[in-house]
Length: 268
Image (tube, rainbow, N blue to C red; front, side, top):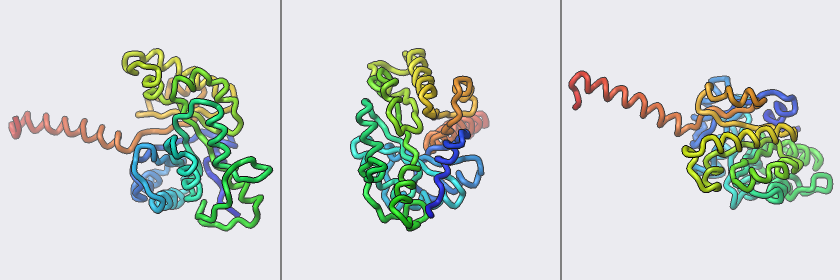
């Protein structure tokens, strides 16, 4: 019997979820997150970071030790290969990027479901570790395991936002996440100059997802940012980004210390 997909269980039970995003594949960082006892899963942002398959397995093992699920954010161009290897390594969820049409979404879902008449996917029987390197006893159990994988999609292009009703009508989407920077980029303006347009698009995406029974997942830089989303009915959050947290601390505290040293005449 394969291990239960924790993120799938929380979604099926209608419970809220909390994650944080990691650039590093170091199991030490994943364990540090797990040791806090506050996070349901970690997301490895592979779209922004180097990675290898041994590292993928070790990251997932570290998450499992602390009872956390794991998500991998994959690039668009090689999404089928990357998503399949992520699932085979034990990641319980995939976050797909840069999709602009419902047809692309349908293809990504097929690529991560078992190639079987009752599943309709393209994924063969992969003898990898999955979750705990278990051996499933039957093909039906393998189908159940692949179907349990959580499939999330970024809604980050103008074309996607314009067709959000069609996008959210595709069966098999578990979560969506609005991407403000890419939305502004594909719209032809700077996000800081058109904050109201970006916020209106985000609100539209969230409300449409909820109307279709899809969980909108929102990224936060601080807990205070959650109020807007909570009022809309959002209950899935990702708090912080590893490198941003580190840079923010080093910048803020570095400036404070340099200013303090200057006030004591140590530096000019």
